[in-house]
Image 1 (tube, rainbow, N blue to C red):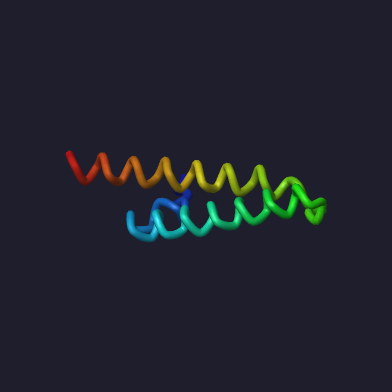
Image 2 (cartoon, helix red, strand yellow; image 1 turned 60 degrees about the vertical axis):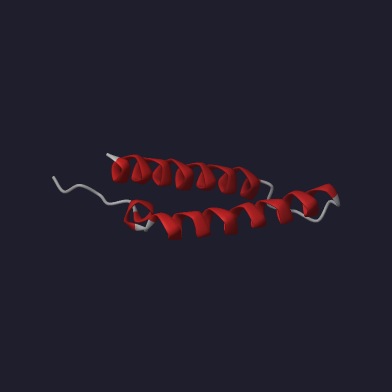
Length: 68
């Protein structure tokens, strides 16, 4: 069996931080648009939150690995 590689795990810590910041900004914009009733696809909020969590988890793991 071949092991699937996660594209998030292949990114450098700096790239993970940049992508996380980018997703946080998108999430903020979506939340603001949701408050004004302009968001039709509300599932995107949940997807972005989960993506941010995945990025932060990968970044933490890489930082711990580098420190060890």
